[in-house]
Image (cartoon, rainbow, N blue to C red; front, side, top):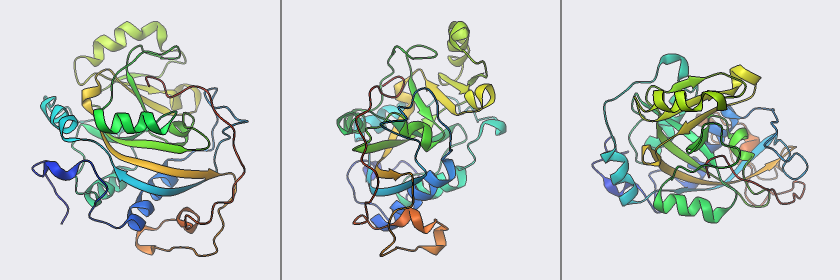
Length: 277
């Protein structure tokens, strides 16, 4: 049975989970399908890493470590429930996925969000040691760890030839919300407001520019890496010579193509990484 509390601290690290790899790949694939968007931003190298139309999950590994989980639990403060209008639309599916990995459902102040990294080594380092807030040249609100609600946004910061993202449990609390086209002039005010809760700033670029919502976390300790996901993308459906079907999850069959079916255009290298990492 799936764990419903953090009493079983062994629920982090390793690859053994309560569901088979096929079932977990299907659940993650469905989460990708429900959060993908056909939108391009200036952060994407369209030539080397074009906007994907199809995602194929190749492996799902449990991320995190006991020290990282301990720090995450120690950082718990007052439960600031997220205002309803800021809830991710995939919360039901997120909880289903977490329970399948033996983890508790999301609390009222938490979201399950994507974090793209420029290379696998970086993702594995975060998986073992946790997130650390950093400032980069393109940071909108200074030193923070940046997360995306959409897999397509997180995908902008991945290596086209070795795609890997992290799914993280993020304690967003009551975020400071900014829907300005350029949040940088309000950086100090937003950070001050965010400190009153869990240090989260919601950059509503969806409202400001019609693109994506991003979550900037000032404190890495409020973010718990849960799953390390390897995947492939393609502008056209993958080969379906031996499709795997799991009707109970309602996953489009294209997302469940076997790992042996890998026909997609070659991609070059990409510069840069997700803001804050």
